[in-house]
Image (tube, helix red, strand yellow):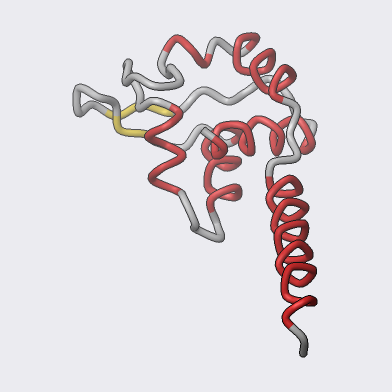
Amino acid sequence: MTHARLPLIGAGLALSALFLSSGALAFDEAAAKALAKRNDCTKCHAIDKDKKGPSYKKIAAKHAGKADAEDKLSKAITSATKVKLADGSEEEHKVIDTKDAKEVKNLVQWILSL
């Protein structure tokens, strides 16, 4: 292989990484925020600070790189699982008002992107 081809290979790898990462982040932020607002999620969560519940960034960090992250978060917001609050108490997590799997996935992907 000649040295002249190395930049082309590097560029190809960079483009592949770009497409892979953009596919992993294929969510509609505005729609996710609207769903969170409509369901009063910000009563307990903020993007970068803990409230009654952990920040979205803390949730994303906890689940970073885990294959089951989307499934776990989807279950948490659709099935009233028990959650531990900042004060140590437990309660059932509020169930969001949509049954649309695409909306749920979009919200979860947005949270995990933070």
